[in-house]
Image 1 (tube, rainbow, N blue to C red):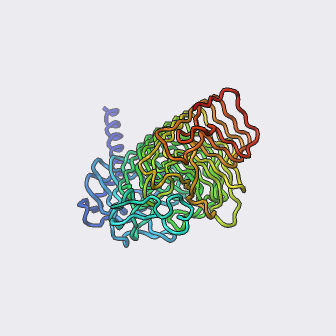
Image 2: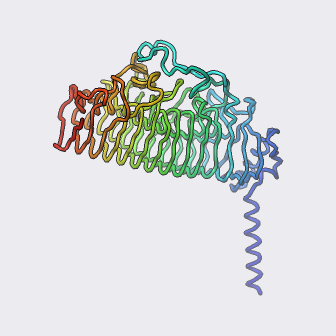
Image 3: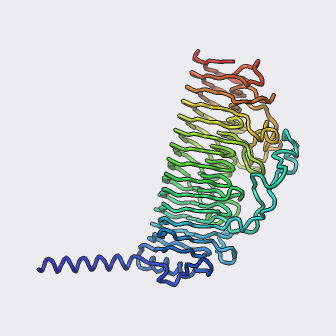
Length: 507
């Protein structure tokens, strides 16, 4: 009997603890009608949970209209099925951090924090857009483009966008200088700017996250992981009006919230089992980075209907090193409007994007089991002041195909952003692979083909300029059907070319 009484007391105590560590936002007065602003009530639940030492803040089914919420240490914010956080369209409901407004969540200097559950964060992004006209490329840059001012011309409507934005909050969900962050199972829809910013954070797990942004909205990135380390991203589906996944080393970013100017490397990040769709780059690494980037691994990634597939970009002092891509399927096409990229499946470039600092390098990049079908070149370019080093392709299949926007967009390379005159978007011949200023580039076990191309600017399978140590091993390649007399491989000012005698040049 005494033993049974003790068990009952223990069970009651456990129930009491469980109850004390679960905080239902409805109990704090939150309204779930989607019409009344309810930020304060939900924040009160978060704050109480934190004061009590942490636990679970639950959001039952319903629609909750909110401005900026601040998560706190040891709090798991959990959606029950059918729960929706709806971003207010009243910008006075959002907190300003640095020079711009944060969105639905702004969390900084916290530990052990999570957003989980089968719910939705709805950014109402289209309410922050002018819907009647698309951004187009204008100005001096058109002097260098094959089509001049007709580049990416749309005869009616807005084409592929992007729309012109109104005033809007910036990153919708922000974690700044946090540790032990978990994001899983929920969905984000129609962010008006970047959806997620993970910056200056360590030990982050992102799993089974879904992002479905309106593809006409500019700057609507999916997941940006910047100046952060020890991160795992898996089993996600992102469809975004800008870059789907960004890894980088930004210490600051044009006054956006969350950036603290911290100088620390970005390293040890794994991304696997994801499906990506983007109007810009499906995967972008780097940009204007002050921090170095290294030890990134991507595996089992499918990229569809994107303007650019994989894009490694150095424009500042931060370098990119030790990046592995394996089991990747890439499908790209050209889009209308002022999106960065022009149908390149893979683009790796290092050149000046700031006026004074030394420009970083790109080194030790491996592609294994990669299949590409795109409407422009695989483009590897470094300016003379830097270099690409140790770029390896093993077991690959590259196809360059004719696309429906070829007349208004084809025959150009897009290396934006940079500050080199004439090198933003510019007229160029188009091989399947273009390489300039690189050391140690290897193509091993692969094929390079064309599909229905007929323009005179389509040329070689590979064009290499100023490449030292170019290795070609068991490669099947052919020049363009529109230029059948050209050699499959064009070499200009190259040194130490290694052809193991198994290069098959077909016509």
